[in-house]
Length: 168
Picture 1: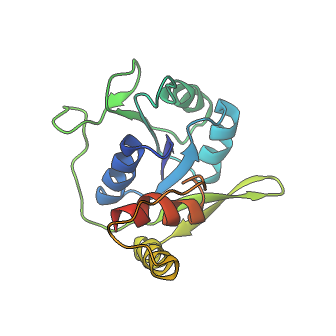
Picture 2: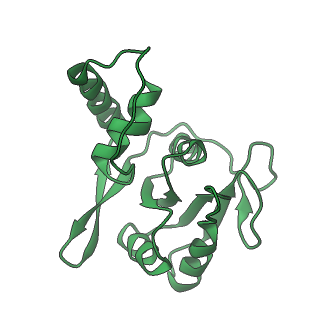
Picture 3: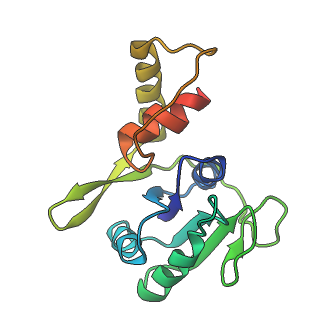
């Protein structure tokens, strides 16, 4: 699983679709989450990789991911897109650290709040696209209309009604 710490910004979407295109199971967590919260998410999805944009505004979520990598034994890679971060592999196109792409479709993981912490919820990519198309049809949103979602993209509803719907 590749845990992506991000927000509703283009860099996070690039990481999400890049990781999915590479055949990785992806999980989304908020870039504003603490290292402890991100660690719980990483343990829940058994994260092999932790990914984040180099910066989201003034925030640098990769710093928290480096802390998580030191505490969670399943983590083998911390990657950053859109800049450099000491201790993290640079995943930009053309970077020597960038992994080779595979075409295997992989699920996307969102987190629901359980009694004992986050619970990983796996979604097929086709399910996400179908739910986004259904949302757009029911809301009667066409290509020329603006789309604003107030739901965080770390949850199924936020991912479907925000970034995925905007791409469709």
